[in-house]
Image 1 (cartoon, rainbow, N blue to C red):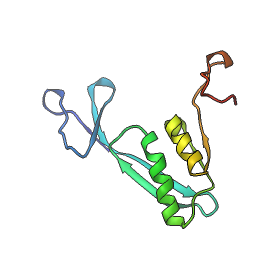
Image 2 (tube, rainbow, N blue to C red):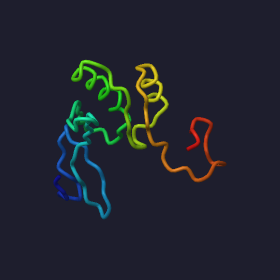
Image 3 (spheres, helix red, strand yellow):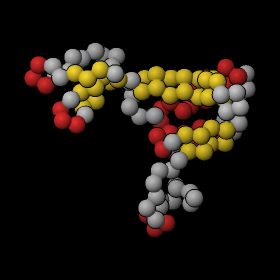
Image 4 (cartoon, rainbow, N blue to C red):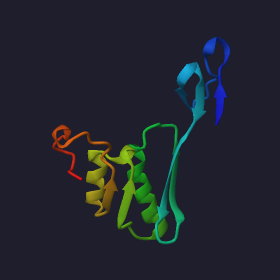
Length: 119
């Protein structure tokens, strides 16, 4: 990754790069990548690279790509908070894939929304 601080504090721009403002007025040009790994064999079965900083949009395409690579659907998937959305959970249920997605940090049982499962 490269750090830029061009004229008047503006970074050089390339339409294929995500430019994120960092602390102290520096900019970083980068990409967001995800991989799906076969747990038993520890090999990559799907990958995705995008300029979108959010992970949630990658889950369904990774699962579908893994199905194509493996010749069968994955039985289960695990992911961090970035993948935990209602749409992704519904898509995993539709595909009959058991999803272990982190709901994020829950402050207390009183602060949980009806859509968050108790741990």
